[in-house]
Image (cartoon, rainbow, N blue to C red; front, top):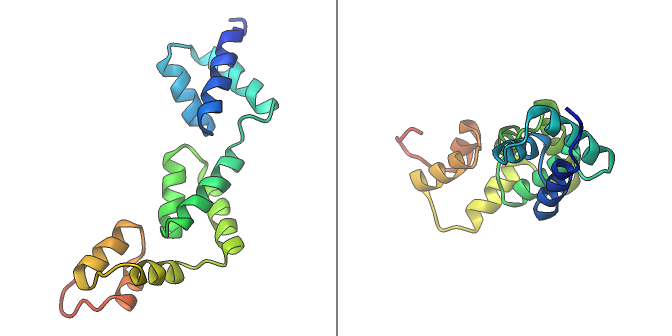
Length: 147
């Protein structure tokens, strides 16, 4: 099937609204009724133009996620759920954390310092943001309670 310019035009419009991963853009085009071949051509075209770049999206979203005091693991998991390759997600999170001089422990401490939570509520908050159990136990006094 020949490339239809309106598919590429729609891809550019969708990217103008919000940066997307290739998977997210393909899903959006599929929902609009375009077929796989048309979508593949459009993705390649916008990639060549520099409008579609999963590495750039991953880096930007990793910085944003870490800025929200989420754990590295949670940020990587969210990137993967958005269609970013696992290795690329891991690299983006690692690089963003190094750039910001951020560790999971520092993020968790800052988060707890900005809230008036303690005990199980603090532990649940940290767990919901992807911090691991060992770190939670280190930072939160749970007494005899378990996670």
